[in-house]
Amino acid sequence: MNIVLLGYPGSGKGTQAKTLSVAFSLFHVSTGDIFREAMAAKTPLGLEAAGYISAGKLVPDALVLEVIKERLRNETGGVLFDGFPRTVEQARALDSYFSSAGRRIDAVVFLDVEEESVVSRLGARRTCRKCGKIYNLLTSRPANEGSCDSCGGELVLRDDDSPSVIRNRIKVYKAQTEPLAEYYKAAGNFYPVKGGGSPEAVAAEIAAVIKGKVGR
Ligand code: AP5
Ligand code: MG
Image (cartoon, rainbow, N blue to C red; front, side):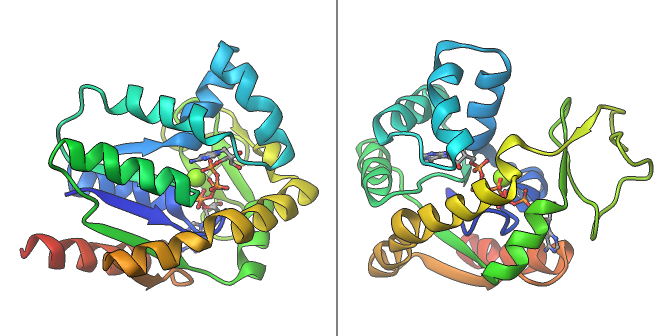
């Protein structure tokens, strides 16, 4: 079972991926998290990606695909992709990489959320610097402002969550990622879910899609 989570920046991909990957024993691959870890460690990958990410632009396809192949090299179980693919070029490359291994994308779950709500969600998001847990100052507050309930790590606003970069990420999403909906509709594995409910309600909708796929 291989699943792609697709949706606007702030649509809830990371929030859902963290719980669903555990519930369904899927290997969670977030290209955004991979780049942020590389940026924090100041590796060559991180230094190259930083300029694109801080401007709200996409990292070039060739670099993203290198990262994905490296991450999947020894992975034979089910994968939950979060934030990848993001261009038709990436989707085609993933299809051909998987089909050469006799694998396929079983479902592309599109988290359907209004543009205005993702803007307000992103401005209120805080992320744990240590364990990556995602909070929201409006809807899922930590017990102590500034520190993570799970590990005590510092809660920070992502550098790309400033109003001007959020606007650019949304523009880039519409131009480069939205066309993926048509690509996957044509492939017959596109499943829109209402992303505006509570995280638990959204998780239940996605779980229903996944369970429908595995017939359990
Ligand atoms: P990435 O890290 O993937 O960012 P993104 O797609 O912009 O998405 P976000 O992580 O901002 O949002 P999300 O959908 O995960 O929402 P979340 O669950 O956190 O990528 C960052 C950058 O890296 C890109 O801009 C690009 O430069 C580069 N990059 C990454 N992958 C790439 C690729 N494949 N190709 C090229 N470049 C790439 O939730 C957001 C907030 O909402 C949180 O506060 C959360 O608590 C809250 N929330 C979640 N669900 C709900 C709900 N149901 N109700 C109310 N609040 C909710
Ligand atoms: Mg995310």
